[in-house]
Length: 205
Image (cartoon, rainbow, N blue to C red; front, side):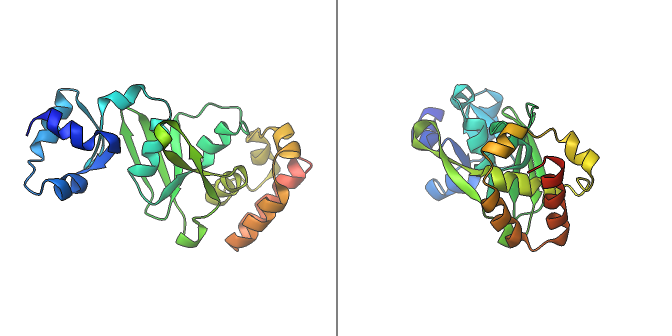
């Protein structure tokens, strides 16, 4: 099989894994993928997952791949908070939440970090449209903030809460506090309840 034949079949997937290739060609020689990656035709995203090098120059695909290479997952935590303008820092890692075990991957698109939560906490995300009529699973602002406070236990005093440097205009004018409270109740976590109370006190909400 030539690379052009392979590309013609698989390119529109953007990101694919070896099992999708085998579903199409059961006798496919996976050494082809290693060879094509060495030539720069493909980019290895993680063990068994690849994309075509052309996607390196397309907007939003680094975020799209976050959803695809470790599933189920959705983008949350620092990446989502930065996207919404709730924290001042630009974020190096692409951070996600998953019901799988905690994991991280590094590839040509960046560093990907996944934090584990229980399956019943995999809610509060929406599908954001992107290029090529694709969508990205992305936490709402309220869920991204709760995920952060839930997963990072050191946010348990006013000093740590202040050091988050959350945008006060956003918190007062745009954050849906009723939705935040509804989501918080679904966690059934006294520790999170305490941190949310502390958040409201620190930022005078």
